[in-house]
Length: 328
Ligand code: NAX
Image (cartoon, rainbow, N blue to C red; front, side, top):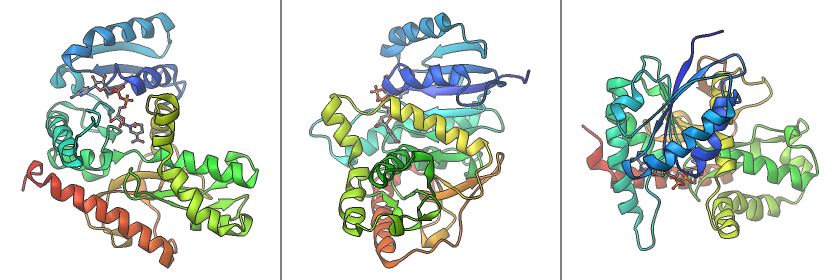
């Protein structure tokens, strides 16, 4: 048996946490040969609820779960962790401007970035889920210059999975017959689900789905607004599907990507496809199991270019709003 991986989850008593922790502890995330120790981080008022979750984890008697820490201390919570899944954040309330949300969460991610740099293991990798996830990731990363750029990620896998499901349903094929369905840009309503490079049973999507108006005018908005549709139907935001996407993202980053596929994750832009360097931007990405890279040289047609620019501009605006939280 390998030695245990230490995995921190913030917001562990929240909705996503309630689905996610059990998937990690059961082996879905790191495989059935990899023991884990969970470091669960919450704010003080949620520690009682978190204790209940810890009791339930215990009651599952997961063979791979070698320990659980529950704490509100970042020093204790991030101490020696190999992965940090930053799920906790403050939700947008009625009357709150985007600027307010960015600044409230910005402070949380400033602190978490600093604490990760000080206390995490040397190989730590960080996936930000709490919204606005791209910009929260940007803030944390810039407050932890000791941690290399290529260890920071923000989640757009849920958007990819939603896009795959919609294409499969429209074309009446299985979801695993959809390939190369990448999300570009921000995890927000400006994201661009790029059907132009995606494939169905090895053929271009546009060759299989002849209804191009559906692709441009129905498919894209369905994916962009799926979170809102779930909130409207359930009265609560997506949680199990979000937790599933966290598992998928970590697996995608830690296992080799099939040669006929890629996946979506937001990472620190190196300027690829003309995107401003340093923005946390979702790109089509591949992994060899240890390291990852942005897929280069994909054709970007005029339609895609306009969509990519729109989502990049939104990320630049968000960055301008939190300028003060980024040390110079
Ligand atoms: P919940 O409100 O159920 O849970 C959030 C938890 O975070 C709460 O228990 C809260 O006490 C905790 N928390 C708040 N501030 C904290 C801090 N400073 N340190 C540690 N914990 C803290 O939200 P949930 O439904 O679990 O969603 C969590 C986040 O994921 C939200 O920001 C949400 O917007 C975001 N999402 C991101 C998605 C993505 O694809 N990137 C999709 C799903 C989800 O909407």
